[in-house]
Amino acid sequence: MTWIFENWDRFWEVTEVHLRLSVVPVLIGFALSIPLGWWASRSQTARAVLFPLANVLFTIPSIALIVITPVLIGVKILDEINVIVPLVIYTVALMVRSVADALSAVPGNVIAAANAMGYRPLRRFLTVDFPLALPVTIAGLRVATVSNISMVSVGALVGLGGYGQLFTEGYQTDNSAKVFAGLIGTVVLAALADGLLLLIGRLLTPWARAGR
Amino acid sequence: MGGWLFDPAHWSGPTGIPVRLLEHLGYTLLTLVIAAVIAVPLGAFVGHTGKGGFVIVGLSNVLRALPTTAVLILVVLWAGLGDFPVYVALVLLAIPPIMAGTYAGIRAVDPVTVDAARGVGMRESGVLLNVEIPNALPLIFGGFRGAALQVVATATIAAYTGAGGLGRFVFDGLALQEFGQMLAGAVLVALLAVLVDLGFAGLQRLTVSPGLRPVGTGGKK
Image 1 (cartoon, each protein chain N blue to C red):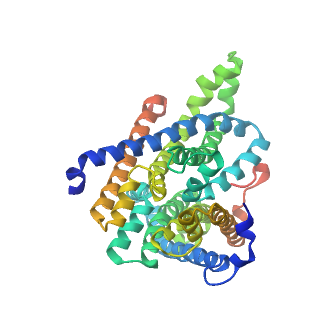
Image 2 (image 1 turned 90 degrees about the vertical axis):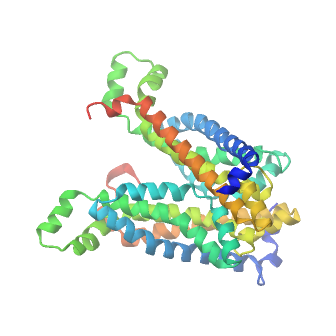
Image 3 (image 1 turned 120 degrees about the horizontal axis):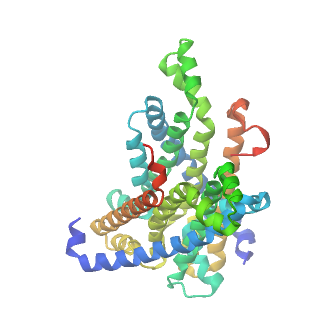
């Protein structure tokens, strides 16, 4: 723990990089998984294609995806995009099922009532289906965010930034305090992000607490 | 690109693909056994008694956030190189899904069924072993399959500290700038993950009571 306070500038620097490398993929992945999840909630074909694909993508080890990405998209191995692209893929693979399950679970009579009131499809999706799907969606988002924050560190094995740098440097210089500092940073960041999402979820779904 | 993978020279010897594949499978299976011995009784106890559920959930979340790379490196620095640090890191990774699956599975058993079991005079241990666990098997298997996927994928990292397994190809390929070798390692890990999952699916089919299979056109899960 003392390592953190004695090296605060360095710790803050890797924290910023770590945060950026984990939050950006979550945002992009979440945005992509909404239309895909919607599609999967409506079409058997989409489910039959997307779910097995998501399972297979999830089995590719992150270290492998991080080293293959630069060759596939033609950038240098030390480009941050090499962590962002794999994490977007994992986020989408995880979130498609959450969003699809959440949308499928919206009660049919609610949808019928909204249709009968004259809601057009887009407005109904934005103001009825999606809000009702939020609790399950946010539960999925929490899992994706925490696992992303934990996975960013893997990028350090090929020389990228974030807390993982403290792991590899600590390993090479036999400095376990440095490794431990990175571990604490990761766990605290994950806990904060998880708590924040939980709070956002509660604020966005006040009806879930009504009548308790 | 597939040249490295299909070169016969890479399919034999002590550092060949079959040996690395077996090492990787060995890490995975022993990890799952150790994790099961720890996580199943804990999940079952909490699920059965209904006490301490928040501890299980909290513990799972903390363990989930734990970066496996850091755990591996810390244990290597403390205990030295070898397979021991690999198992510590992977077991910690496998515990949360197995524990959560067992806990959720037992909580989800219909209380009427459990009540009936008590009503016909079963002891608590009988209720747990003969009623709750068999009924919870689908969710318990779900936990194991999730853990297995993560362990197969993450066992790759073991090679960073010089251990064996398919990760050797990824890290050796990275060091030598041999893209074919890295790709072969990645593809083999993904294939192994699919095979392990199919193995669990088969085991699930054999052990889960036919009465618990999904009915109608809903399909699996």
